[in-house]
Length: 150
Image (cartoon, rainbow, N blue to C red; front, side, top):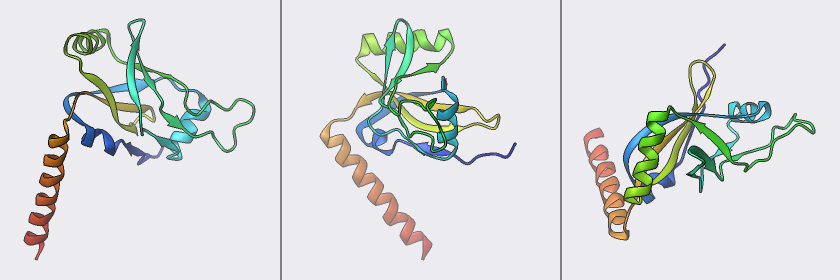
């Protein structure tokens, strides 16, 4: 099997949130969903994670319908279960309940075994001045890179 270079990112998440801890989780998918992801037809815009019955679910993740799918095709924005071990789930659930933090999907990729994985982050929302600071740091870094390239 050839290695796929599928790497779908949620760029808005790093602008809106400060990441405290990151995890890699598996995703429960149907056949047409994994085929669409392998074609790069997925989006993490406006996605978030929530605990339902001690299980972690990702909501609002858009995986476009598979072009060759028939009546078996999936719903594009259905809720999908994330797979983590119990220790990680307990830690995340405790942090979310106690500290008021949130869990945000940051990227989706296909690993070397051909399985779809989602990178999630335990995150704290940024204030407006934090966002301005992030933009300033990014601009400064870009200027420094330009100066050193010459």
